[in-house]
Amino acid sequence: MARRVLDATLDSRTARGRLKASGKPYWRQIEPGVSLGYRKPLSGPGKWVLRFHIGGKNDYVTETFATADDFSDADGVAVLNFWQAQDKARERMVDRAQSAAGIAAGPKTVNDALDNYVAYLEAEKKSAQEAKYAIDALIRPVLGNTKLNSLTTEQIRKWFRDLAATAARTRTKKGEEQKYKKANPDEKEQERQRKSTANRVLTKLKAALNRAFDDGHVASDRAWRRVKPFKNVDAARVRFLSSDEIPRFLEAIEEDDFAKLARGALESGARYSELYSFLVRDFNPYTGTLSIYDSKTDKPRHIILSHDATDFFLELTAGRDKSERMFLRKDGSPWCDDAQKAPMGRAVERGGIVPRITFHGLRHTWASHAVMNGMPLLVVAKNLGHTTTTMVEKHYGHLAPSFIVDAVRDHAPSFGQAGEGKVKQLRPPTTSRKRVTR
Image (cartoon, rainbow, N blue to C red; front, side):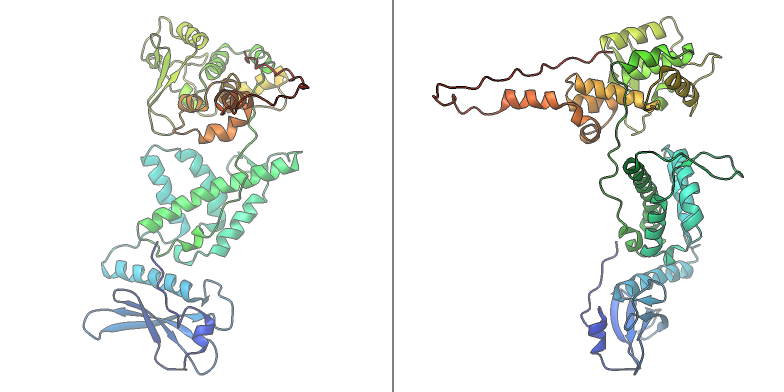
């Protein structure tokens, strides 16, 4: 971010009000060869003036570009305060420098910045498809045609608030009227979900705009940096299958190919995209591990399997070609994006699983039961592919109260015996921790 240049004579309307009217601007250099000026008239608001040094000792080009906020509140477009005038001056400096160098200007609109960002995600093998859907559906229609140099904090905030107030969308075919999900009867949860979605989309917008800023295509990032995400809305209520629901869910699956896939998710905690990418050779029967080389986080990892899980994968891969996809559909084709949704929905419906759960909930199920069985959070995090325990603590930490109780009682300091009184209250029996099994 470009540093702010301070000037006690220009940085407020009160300070400027003490200046004498003058036909010559009061100048303040903001960059080498670039100065911001304020011209004080006899009456009315002052004007912001920009001066470029273009060559010789006294060769300058000046232009008046905005009205100062001497009487009206700054709007970020026509009426600017001192800090906004600095930002605008730097934007004009960038445009002028690119034009003088014969360089085609970089992204001119938000759409251009979004295009560059999606191209970057595709080149880096990130989750470009998911980001592109959100960008096309939720950002471009409102902000896409706005010029980067004209984008204001107020515009972004309004878009952000409106997005949080909009009902959740469902995938709709191109050309058809947009469809929306049914309202959640839990109004507070529905509000949290909408705000959480708005936060995620805001993150994508900021990432695109930050790339444009880092590449020098826009002079300041202040417009979007001032827009803050909603607080305390991203901790979703993790839905996982209880020990009673797991057998009901598995028995409700009629398709043998999906049964193997779902069992693989429950036994490993792997993401759906990881499961359908597994090759037979990714399972090591000697160490009881699954190897993931192209994960969501771009960091290879090994999933350590339980004895039961190892037996399942031994049976699944026995006698098969090492280069074959581990999980195949009944017609021999590999699983792909979204192919799991229909059979998952049927199994949930037939099994009477209420509230409903998505396929990703099977990953939550592995993690939740692991934590409730006393597995240390760091171990859970490593097996799930998280570099720290932050996400595990956020989603599953509340499921390990007995683990915390045991740790406190095992390691808390001791300060001697209780008092010598003869009357003592009987200690109530502690609830034993039961291992949750599938």
